[in-house]
Length: 462
Image 1 (tube, rainbow, N blue to C red):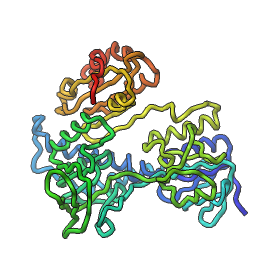
Image 2: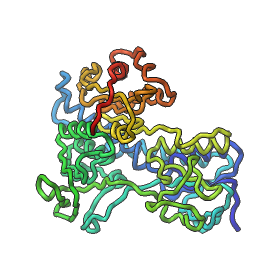
Image 3: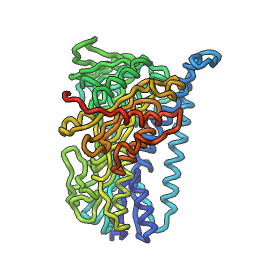
Image 4: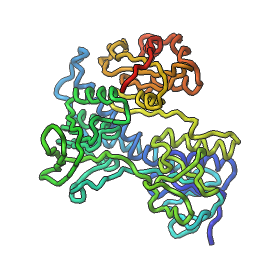
């Protein structure tokens, strides 16, 4: 006999628990199923622990630069990776434990620890028990991919999850993947004291960004001693006592990179393979991402998919927005849609990259007539005063409507400052609204009006 609920939430990442809270408040009997760690990627192997590690790396880097600011610190700066890991574990663990405690304390909510699998479109099995509900919400997240490079089956390697267990400084960390996750770990461990080499198959880093962003980020990281092997079209791995070897087919440089440890940062895949989607008739694409409409509904009535597993966003903030969309439509009569949100994300290197809306490349591809403005971060007095004047600001606006189409801020506080433009984009206001604003001096934000006052037509060409 199946145990009946009004709703079943599969997965306790960023969307599922919040939705369970809303369903609980609405008096709906809700089952929450989590097979691993409460909080999902963000709390356990993503945002919270990695940014905690980045904070420690920043302090180590700042301490080494103390003399640049007229401050003397006695002796060499060293890091205690066991203490750094313990701090990270404590912060991440507090978030995880707090979330689980909150969920278990909610009225009308029953928490199940175990792997869920569909029996049919209304029934889920967990730990041998059958649960049934008219509404089922999938929030199972994703995990790091491990491409089958030749030799990888006999080569020890780490992913972002495995890096959470590292309590030492690798002698030489080889990072395969020159995108967001790989670059954050590369800079982090370089600042901890590792030699770091990044191997990237494309001709430039973070290839979804404009070329000037890729060049700027690479220059920042190279200035800290990180080495890069680009155009690595054919990658092979093998053990090489006492570490690993990565063979690359590159136009320049040695054909082999040797290191003590290997980090694979080459993409993600959804945790949908063992859910039994086919038993419920739920459609997914060839990569396993569940197909959803603009309101997170699957092709099966009464079943929704939220967060990374639906392929419509790979961030904590997009997962939470999925929850907001589902709750608004289901409980509030408020017609919210995925297509209403503007792309926004950050690369949390130091300095960070804040990115919103369209890139210059995308604007050109769409054939839109646009205006563009750029200023170097060395023009920002706050950045100069802080000794962190690397990077630049770029803003693109539509030539006809003067609405902001996109922006990139690679520089001090760029991940925060970019929101003053994002909010204006949501308001669909003309860029002159910000161009004529008076911002506080000395801040990074004060240069935004200046950039907007100097917008010029986007030149033709690539």
